[in-house]
Image (cartoon, rainbow, N blue to C red; front, side, top):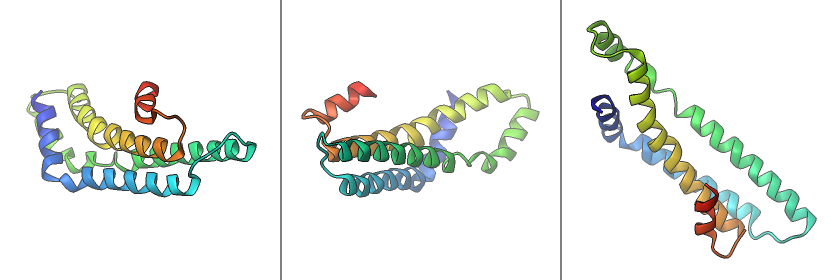
Length: 134
């Protein structure tokens, strides 16, 4: 728990990293939602839906890769703590990955998906259906 608290403090000190990820996700969802708009059951709209989902997968994948390069910043701290035999690599990996997953991948992805799902107009109860799907 102490290592996870260190990672959470890291993101509290660098709050703009989390905020920027969320803002980029929201902006991309609004742009994509306005491009693809309300879709009907016509064949061209079904093909557009596949394009929208493809772009969504590519966007979320690139965003996840781009936000995962933060290990090199704390590499020296990890080496010093490991040499002092405070913890090994596995606890450090889990303590670093879990807050990172929640703050930089799950929250922006849910924001993106909720807005995108709503703007494409898939169902009447959009947010409830989106949460059931996820």
